[in-house]
Length: 258
Image (cartoon, rainbow, N blue to C red; front, side, top):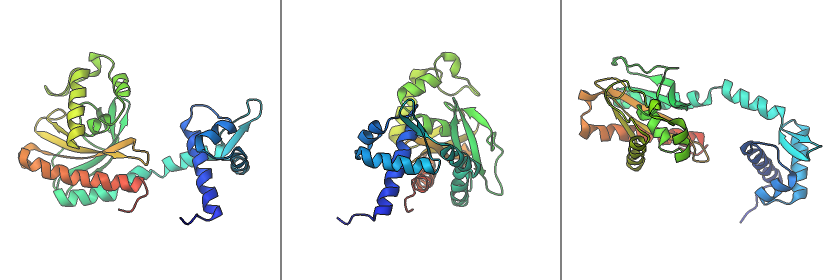
């Protein structure tokens, strides 16, 4: 097998070091980094030295540990300023709206709520409570449950610790953790989440999770529509369009061709 050039191999190792440091709650020793990466300790020291010179990592001499540096922080802030999720999602949602002629949106988990970052709608659309910046209870929305279904059970339990956590907007929706877990299990197996009248009477939504390069849920693509326009048999076709869009956005986040 052809080996990548030394500069590419070095860049890959440097990126690996930064990923490991970013995944830890505290600075690490070079020896631990070497074990995690399966790289000789001498190589790790060279990489750390080069990254420290550019401000990407910081050395704590008293503790003999290494952590992320100020430049890594600045890049993280720049990432947030550029709103990459919104920029990547918007053109795909626009295409989805053209295809299904219903309102599409992208939301992320914000505590026990889902917060909407992008909304695209056709020229003629029905009014909905969903808009950019709006937060709704995650357990009631298709977007929220699409994300919750791919979180560890302990994290879901922490988000909904008591019966008071299960707020209601209509007379529908899960009211206990057991009910929520059953719903999440069924929707995870189905491949998309469905909400019918849990947020607004007469309106329904279908949603699919969007994942990052490590398979972690980062948000969900959804479409909201009047129930009478999409009876149960047609909702599967609508869900298929949502799934396709969510998969394309996942591929964009993972830097894979789409």
